[in-house]
Image (cartoon, rainbow, N blue to C red; front, side, top):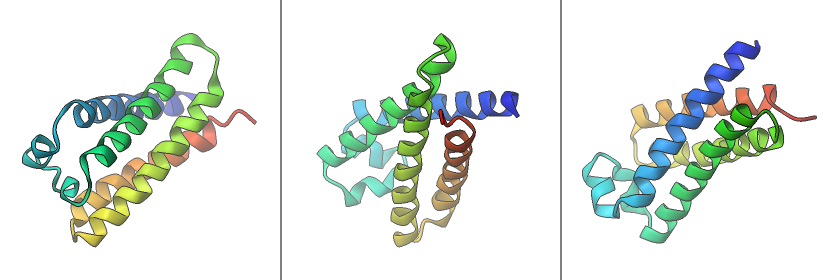
Length: 121
């Protein structure tokens, strides 16, 4: 179980650091052009906030494993990813982008697993 947690936690953290960085440092137009059509529904400031939450949450999944302490960050980061993915699923279903919604559902399940298995209490 511990090895599975480490793998899922590392993979999820890496994915969200990469995607959060991409969204944070790209313009709304570049995000839309690269296939992020969901961004059409949001103002650039909101996209940056979502990206920052993804980036910080991804980092909070990786850092505790590297340094061996601060595991409350793991729980907080996984919970934040779960909240973001719930909103993403809603957005994609509303836009009838069911493939994207199913990918986000997989990320949600991974985040819930990490939040539950890595909880500090």
